[in-house]
Amino acid sequence: MNKIAQYLNTHMLGEVVTNPEVRAAYSHDGSVLTHTPDMVAFPRATSDIRKIARFSWQLAEKGHTLPLTVRGAGTDTTGAAIGTGMVVGMTAHMNRIFEYDPGQKLVRLQPGVTINALDNALGLHGTAIPELRWEQPQATIGGAIASSRAMADCIDQLEIVLASGDVLQTKRLNKRELGKKKGLTGFEGDIYRAIDALIEDNTELLDELVYNDDRVDHEGYAGIEEVKHKDGSFDLTPLFVGSQGTLGIISEMILKADFVNQSPSLIVASFAEAAHARDAVDKLEEAQPSAIEYIDNTYFEAAMKAGKVFPFYEQASEQLGKVAAVIVVTVNDFNERHRSRKVKKIRSLLKPMDAEVVSTDDLINDDLRALLSVTYWALNPDNTEFSMPPLLDGVYVPIERFDEFSRNLEALGERHHVTLSLYGRPLDELWYIRPVLRLASVGDKQKLFKLAAELAELVEKHSGTPFGASGEGRFGAGIRSETGAQAELYRKIKAIFDPYGSLNPGVKQHNHVRDLAKQLRGSFSGPAATHHLTKF
Image (cartoon, rainbow, N blue to C red; front, side, top):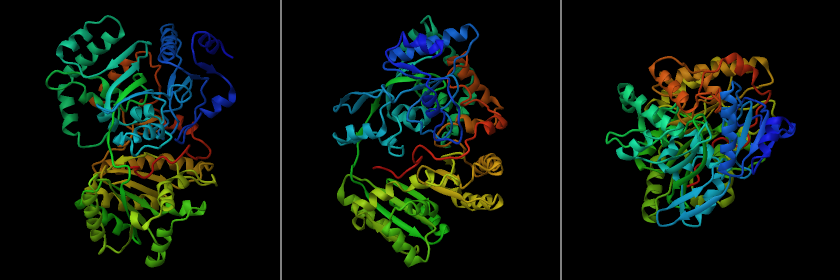
C-alpha cells in the first residue's frame, strides 16, 4: 500500500485501497473510455471527504497534484466518473436516507443513495422526485445532480466539500446574507467575492445566456446565469448542478419531492416507417401527455436476440410487415377521468397514422416489465464484438427540426457505413444516437471520433446543442471548442473553485482527441442501460 493511502487510513473512518482488482473495477464507467486510478477511497462521513480534499489541497500547495474524481454508480456515459489519482466512491457507505418531512415533502440524504432506493422510500408516501424519472434506477442521486442541470428545480439545499476541504452550505441568500458571506475570511469568502465580481463583470454575456435559455445546454458552467437574481439574491447551487464534480464534492443534500401517480397509463404505437413515427410525434403533443419516447427497432431486435418477448411488437410486425420505430406515450394525470380521456384522444390521433396501437389495458405486467428494460439489451450485448457505444448522449434538437435532423442523421450513417440507433424524448427535445461498431477494430475506433465530431456539427446546424442531457465529460470535452468569451468565463469559474486543478481534471476542460484515442476501450458494454422508459 502506498504512503498516501496508509496515511489517510490512519485518519479516516472509511477506507483507501490500492488493490489492483479494485482499481481495475473503477477504471471504466458507462463511457467508451478507461482510466485506472492510483487508489480508491470509500468515505464513511463528510469528515472523511474533508480530510481527503484537505490532503489533496496541501499536496497541491507543495506542487504535487492528487486528482480527485468523485464517483457514484459509474453509469455516466461521458467519462466523468473515471480518472487518475484517487477515485472517491460514494456508494459503499455514503448511502443513507436520513429523514423525510411529509408536510414539506423534503428528504435529506447522502449522495450515494441510489435512485431506486429513493424511489422505493418516497413511494411509501405517494411522492417522488419527478426530475429523476429518466435516470437509471441504479444510478446515484449525487451523480444525477452532478451530471444534469435539470435537477436544479428539485434541490432545496446542498452541502459541498470544497477543494480546500472547507464545507459550504448552499441556499438562496438575500442581499444582507450575501454581504456577510462576502465578508468571511477564508476560501468560502473568496468564492463568494470572486463569483459576485465575475457576474458583475459579465452582465452582457450573462444576459445573452439567459436570452438563449430555451436551448437546453449543459456545456461548461451554464448555471452561472441562475446564481444572481435581479432582486440581488444569490445562490451557488446552480453552479454545482451539472458541474460533474469539478467545482466541489456533494456530501449531503435536501431535495423537494412531489406527489406523483404511481400507476400511469401507457400507449404503445408501432410503425412500419420511421417517417410515420416522426409525424406521429408532432400530432401527439396536442393531447398533452406526460411523456413521449421514440425507440427505433434496433433496441427491440437486440432484446429479442437475448430472449426477451414482446407480444405487441411481434403482432405489429405481422400486421405491418415490419416495425421501424415504436412510440411509447405516458399519461400520469391523477384524475382517472382526465387520464382516460387523454388515452382515448391519443388513440384517436394515432388511428389514421398506419400504426399498431396497444395500451396499458392490452398489456400484462410481464409485457410492461420487458418494455421498460428494452434499451438494456442493445447497450449491454452478450457478444461484445459489436457494441453501441455512446457518442454524445442526449443531444438537444428542437422538435420542429427533428424530422429534418433525423433524415440527415440517416445520411450521416450511410456516409460512414454504420447503423445509428436512435432513442428520443420528444417533449424534452433530447435524442440519444448510438452507432453499431467494433471497438476492437482500429478503423471503427477512428470512426467513433469522426462520427462524434460530425454529429456535434449536425446538431448545431439544426439549432441544437451537443450537451443537452449532461455535461461534456472527458469525451465531449475533446470535441468542443474552447474559444470565445463564454469559454473564458467557464475557465475563470473553474479557477475560482479549484485553483490547483485537483477536482476531476480533464472533465469540462479541453482534451486532445489523440489522448482520448489512447483511453478508448477495446470493447464496450455499459454498466447498465443508459436510458430507459419513464417510471411515472
